[in-house]
Length: 307
Image 1 (tube, one colour):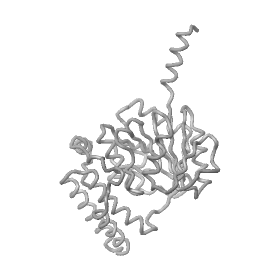
Image 2 (image 1 turned 180 degrees about the vertical axis):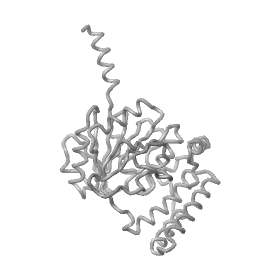
Image 3 (image 1 turned 120 degrees about the vertical axis):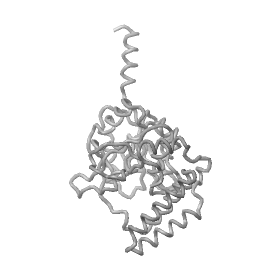
Image 4 (image 1 turned 60 degrees about the vertical axis):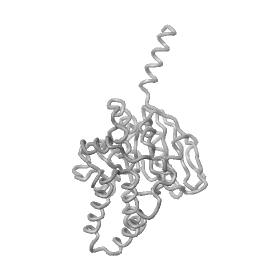
């Protein structure tokens, strides 16, 4: 083979490869689960991975040598912790994995990258979530209002945050995760921002990621954060009158849902009041609300941001 042919062949092979920057966030409290996730990542076929473990208030240790370590001196919360890891990895695609999730199929990343290469309008993918050998997956893991079958793929307007694949350019253009949220509903804002940036958010029902089934409602904090961040979603993202309509519709739904559960409703209302009282922007103070074009795109694809 001539030198010019060899160079052309190498360029062709490079263009076919899928490069991933992978961010795994942990506080170091479940090392066995964390390393199970790393093992599933390192077993992936057809991809080149650049992986960082972000220690949220923890100096990572006891993890594979192939994984970079980034210790944050304090816990920044989940969205800000994920954002902190992104500058430390390279790749055409980004993948965010919770420290108690793992990939049961060794072609998962390659399949998501292939889909986004084939359909570059897709900026973000959430795979189906299940616990292998465990109880049935809760419906809340299907990010659609009309849930339907978990195996059915479709456009979506929110995502379960524990395993998210993105084109890196989509992440950069949408501004990343909403840092002040700490946790809860950051997957809604991220999805909205991806739509606003001109991409599609896709639920990939024919590809599974594994995660234990845990009920988040066991803590009052869940209800507080759920309500506070609903209000923050509206304040940070939606122009009037969509902001009022969004908060109003969710407030009505929660009163109906938890009318006979006053303890949960009390915690939710405390969060609702905090959502109006506290600053929702923090370090994102320069972030603009969704554009009229973005709201129209979401509405045209089936989900006006009022419910």
